[in-house]
Image (tube, rainbow, N blue to C red; front, side, top):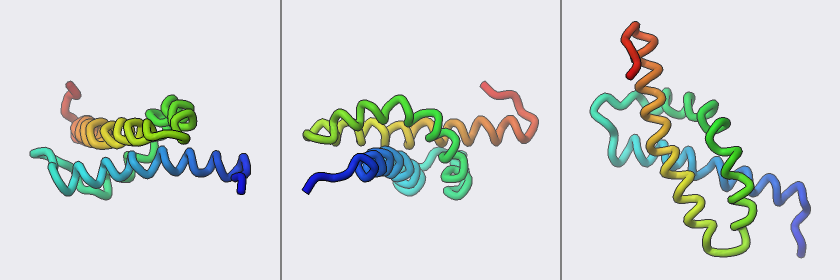
Length: 102
């Protein structure tokens, strides 16, 4: 049974966004930073950040759907969720409180 073009596109987008948000949760639960913001704030900020970070990776992900290199691509996306999101949340919190961003 062949998947439809529409279903394939939905799967590619889901496979891109799920590891990103899983990376946010893993970072918060397993190894939070010293001034780590709450998980709710990180997930909320994860939406616009993921819309900036993930679109360039989606064509790569679509090409790797057929073999095992999809695991490396999903790992890279998860790593982006772990690192970028907490840093961006900390910088925005610092800016909102009147401090200077570094």
